[in-house]
Image (cartoon, rainbow, N blue to C red):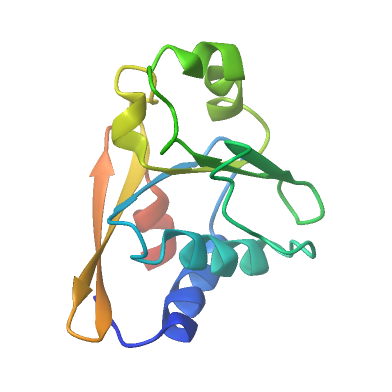
Amino acid sequence: MQLSNPSEMRAVAQDLAAVLRPGDVILLKGDLGAGKTTWTQGLAKGLGVIEEVTSPTFVIISEYHSGRLPLYHIDAYRLEDPAEAENLGLPELFEGDGVTVVEWPERLEGYLPEDALILTLSYCGAGRELTYQVQGHADILQRRDK
């Protein structure tokens, strides 16, 4: 899917938010500046989050509880060792009461849930290309397409 500007990216994410359920996990891949946090801002808006959503690069995890589901936004970029996931309580978040979005999921190899929606944002001219991949039995796209 081609996205020509940040507003389009947020709108796509906002639409997806309508079908999300507790325990859904979205893994966001993409280079620095590709729009991972911008996409998450759209998702948060679709969930009804009223707080400003910013990149959790330095805090690792940001939690938002003002929407219809809690949103857990993880940025694993600064993690040196995937084992840090245990100390941060990530396994509990993945199975919890909210939606979890993970930026830089490749840094958490071995600690990610089997069922997730993988979104990859890549540069495409002045815009971005968004691709979807289902991991395991995640059915988010099936719910969206009904």
